[in-house]
Image 1 (cartoon, rainbow over the protein chains, first blue to last red):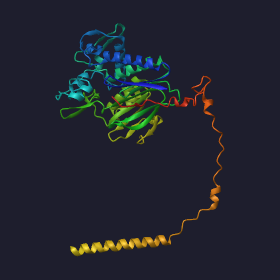
Image 2 (image 1 turned 45 degrees about the vertical axis):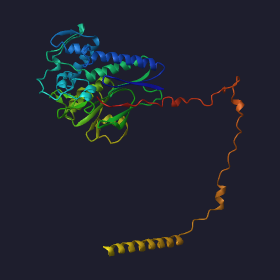
Image 3 (image 1 turned 30 degrees about the vertical axis):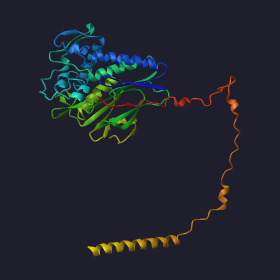
Image 4 (image 1 turned 60 degrees about the horizontal axis):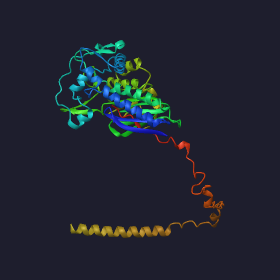
Length: 312
Length: 91
């Protein structure tokens, strides 16, 4: 029997599912790990390791091997996506009102004022010293590890849970990792949410194992002054990305690949697809536009069991 | 106006009466339902002969109280039917 638990962490709902004798202790170990990681990598907690790093721009600072791992991964993805994936957009996120957790913004609203974006500061300006676990951010740069940290945490949590059971799934805010296939031999069911109406489902996906990640401009959005804002910043403009799609879902072997490329494909849009897919890992993508039309890569239908609209 | 009202009432009365009469005539001339054949009663298969129920005392275990064998065994293929609902959501 597959057992599951749900709890709130990283400003989203986390679900752990496991099948096997060690399911319960494994899920509690994974939950503790996720809670601990949130304390370290959240930009909203003043005592977090990431806040220390952001407060030290211009100086070398000692970081943990885990944060170093995340920063190295981020730099690799930044280069691989030609800068479309860029964690150094925190200054722009704050400027457009995302300076508190999304729960707090929904309660109290965002600050109305927004200045013009500052001069671009390439993420490649960051200096990493992996041998000594030291980092130096250039002055004026601030990091938001949001999505990639969530994917990294989920990957590690799934590996931890896998020590207790052969079959498990870990999910948080649209990112899902599966290890093993359920004992009845069937694939995992994943419901492709309609970004226009989160209670509605556009399709049912069957995933044997691996990872699924979704980026959406609808989930973390708010009003600033007269403007609707969302959290997916286009690093080329410093403003929320203008895209013809509302959400992009990526199916890949690694949750880190899936998370980064879901974001990059959504921000880059249809025109940005060829270079992204050429340089990136093998993956399948599914996009949903403003009227609910589904489009995707040639292999996407293999995963789709039922769908409301024929993917194009 | 008054003439119009009288006219409408007259028209409704006439059409109602005519509709009733036409319906009556149609039903009166409709074919009768087919008579049931006496043969169909033989179509029914004979009821199977069931074994008599075991006496309740046979369910008792040697110590009495609970049956020694469970009345049904859990089906292993039902064990994994619960599937957590993973949703893409998005962030």
